[in-house]
Image 1 (spheres, rainbow, N blue to C red):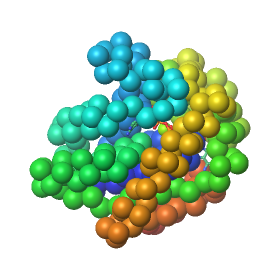
Image 2: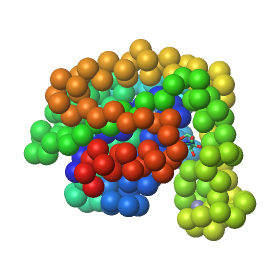
Image 3: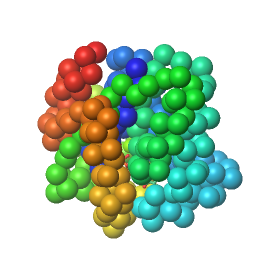
Length: 215
Ligand code: AP5
Ligand code: MG
Ligand code: ZN
């Protein structure tokens, strides 16, 4: 199965992608995570992406399209994958159509996780992740079972993202509205768009997504 998760910053794309991967074996491909790893490792891609990411703006289409085109050909994507944060522009969506037709595969569903703007800032401001395995948490909404210890790997090291500050979140939200929302009619026309209410609890959103996908 090939699924896209669409939604503004803080909607819960990464949270649901991690869970879908654990529950249903759909490989999570997060362009945000890949770009952050590239920045940390100071690769060529990282150097090209850093300035835009720090400002909350989108990095160039060419860069992310190339990353995904290479990534979906790896063995762990053979049975299906979940795109988290890609595509984000109509040009990226068109490039994805070409990539999928080149490898003889088709898109099964696009899930839009809808959340009102007013709650996104709190979602993003309270977010942190395990420094070792990347599992995502929230100060209020998703605490580890034992305070200060990762549920997944037992690490006690956590990190917060550089772009999770109120000012950058507003730029990211603006980029979403201007550049990514045009994807909604694009996928609606193709008959693959499903909408999920992202304002529910994490578990309720998970159940709604599973029902929508029939998994
Ligand atoms: P990216 O990493 O994709 O960031 P984003 O789109 O801004 O989305 P977030 O990761 O902030 O939100 P999320 O929906 O994953 O929320 P999460 O599940 O963590 O991109 C970062 C940057 O990289 C971009 O700004 C751009 O520069 C660049 N980039 C990436 N892809 C690109 C592309 N294709 N083209 C160009 N540039 C690209 O949830 C948030 C918090 O809320 C968590 O703490 C979570 O625990 C909590 N939470 C989740 N669900 C719920 C719930 N239902 N109730 C309560 N709390 C919840
Ligand atoms: Mg994310
Ligand atoms: Zn961990």
